[in-house]
Image (cartoon, rainbow, N blue to C red):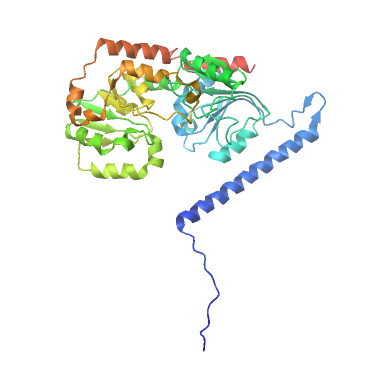
Length: 415
């Protein structure tokens, strides 16, 4: 007798895949909801349109001034702007993708914060926005999921870094109406790309660097350490050419052996994209009491403690140089510019590289084993100090005035 064979088939989905599928379903449902809402608004506009324009009923969601903050790390870029709107008693709509955005904790009366979700959920809302002026740090408008709404009069991008504006991914700034710069030097490369690509010229307004204005105030409030130990700050970028991934133990072993305090501050993206590498390195140095890992949201505490910084092409080099005026060692292992706007500039050297060569000292891998002697012999010359001062003057103009100048431009543009 042939035994009965069960024809029941069981499909196994591992927990990780199941969680991903669940997230996709939730995201799709939310997107469909907002798309349906957008379609309903369009129908209202269609049926309530009047000769000479659209009725106010159809555009009841209109906001005159809007900020969109894509993440917690950009709050300090927008805080001086929010403070200035509040000071002037002018209403500002503040959309954020950070549930714990500090804006919610501020005692604002005129600044209205609202959490609009993350990623595609936020973009769906922004894509059907009705507004006079929209300010954001998010690049790639009209390139990726974030699209220009036909009911927004002006889109403006504010730079959240004092280095080259062409280090965004390709076409990152092309479809904005204006770009707010930290220094005049950033204009030339943007204008070169506009002519090269045959796109509409943007308004390029130099306003200063709002987050550095905030950092300057906050870092001055941090008390000096008693019995301060000599401190080296290792603060890399992330990815294949980031110094933690590229060199890892080859750099950190000799640094740990110096006995100095070594603060390692990985790039925020490393926690997401390079978690395995970080876990390996943390385990390797868990017995080294002089190794400190810094994952704090704000970098100013480590900047204040450091006597010297070691980095690669990370923008934190300029934060440290401009705020602390101390020496920098950099490891230049080459950055593949092909995915970035800067690649289309041809052989022109980026400002951030030419400046760093003047105010920093290059560290080669062959020097790693003698790194204590290299650092001890590195004198902070007048030449280096003057180069730091020159770079700061070029890249951080209108120090302390960014919030006021940004709001002035917003009000003049959207009367």
